[in-house]
Length: 339
Ligand code: AMP
Ligand code: MG
Image (cartoon, rainbow, N blue to C red; front, side, top):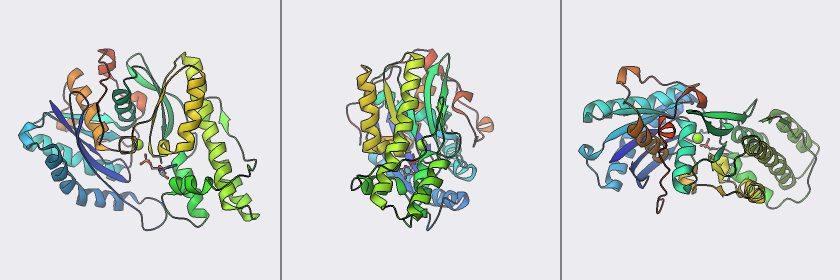
């Protein structure tokens, strides 16, 4: 059994193909890079429309499969930018109709946790999802994934990107701040905004830019920002573990590629006797393989969605959709290798 998944929620458009054991048979991705400033939804959508046909060909070639050998089609239904989501959904619907294959729209955030569950073999972990637009702590309870804590203003990645661009850098800021922080040593005090299970970053942005205006060195600013922001994320993840009496944590999202964040969360989780797992970079960032795998879980546990009912939902909340495969107790399947 093979499912083909299409991801197009924001910058990344990607086609992945997986089998019923979560083996990644193909993954072909491309990223829209704004010439300057933030993402323009229509420009990004045009990019995805241009690129998806070739990515589809590449994925089929990589997997060595013909269209007739694909058993299901899935796509990211939300959350995301409307025009970008519609680009991927339109291609998925066209394939479903042309190849006469069932269609499975899936939630983007849930897909991050499902691919991490499959790769790690951890049955019931908490997900710390740290990406450009999303910052959430998510866990499963009674039929759905629930958001236990989240940002109450901007996503951690958007915060890092905005900060870096305001300091004269280019998109994406996160990896460049990571490199700069390695040369920093002075820890400037910055606002630490944890509100119960939630976090906020806009005060941190304002305070960091004020420090820069007073002549603080960029490596020290980067070091201080990473220390503060990643401590906040580690704290709400630990609180979620404690409240829910859970032990294991998986990471997802572009910011979860950060070595400092991985190290801080790993230390916290291991001190509590648990395991932390972060997927390899290609499956931690937005990718079609996680969409395909969640489509495969849906294929095994739910009816396909008629094309007429497959509208995208830019604001789809993690807890709005059911996870019938969890109710059915489908186990995660560890994969031997990832691309
Ligand atoms: P995503 O939204 O999941 O596609 O991830 C994109 C975001 O991840 C952007 O905001 C990047 O700045 C951020 N990012 C990527 N790599 C890193 C890294 N090594 N450290 C921190 N942030 C990163
Ligand atoms: Mg994502």
